[in-house]
Image (cartoon, rainbow over all chains, first blue to last red):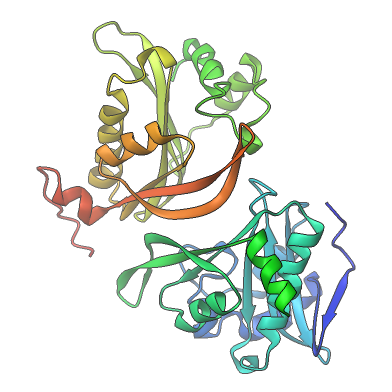
Length: 184
Length: 175
């Protein structure tokens, strides 16, 4: 695997770099926003507000199979992206979160393109997977718009607003990404 | 599980057909590795996994193991079963699944129980379907085994489906 630390990728007005513990305050600016917290950030199965120390600890974790990136525009953190392949580098998972106040400006699409380009060009990824709560209709529409296909759902995976809800699963094959890249 | 079961666990762990792909390779797990894993388990009421040995009632012989992992309190868990080749096809997986499902739904109050398998193991898929599991997630070509890509399959059963098909009543009252 390439050393992902200290890398900065730029696409248009959006850049990605490896997250640092010092980014905790910037991420906390939106992590507990209801729209973001509903998506169970950082692997939460039961939602609760994240503290600065919890976010700092998460950003301080060292791993050669997982990376958390901050997404910036004009020096302002507008979101974060996470990739991981604990089980198999052939099939890494990816996730993307944009600060609700920064949405609909193209940051998500550009960050997703950089993340997927990295996974398919610089790692052994053959298929990339992602998971999105069924209540997150905008997130599902976004995933499908950038080429992901529905792979099914983890049923009754989380409780939200008084009901057990499913989490949708998506995948994107290398050959599908190659078609998308050629069209860009 | 007893220490005398560790040899069986070594054989099951190194089974190239049922167990070996990706990070479970290479199949060189030793008795010492297995012993270290299970000997070092400490008493806790906050465990999120369990492993049981499967014995034939008639002979008392240990023929496989089963268990669950990734338990999220009152929400979900992932089960796994494996048997020695000699007893494949005898229907033990169905019996073991039933015991695990009763434990996880009726005693532990979970909402969903799942398992991971892949499209290159149709016997495992069929066995799980007979127990009432359905393929809920199919990650295409996410498994590489024996020189081929296979789909990674997550099969699950919801609490509602479990009680709908068993002569038991769901009194949890948490729909």
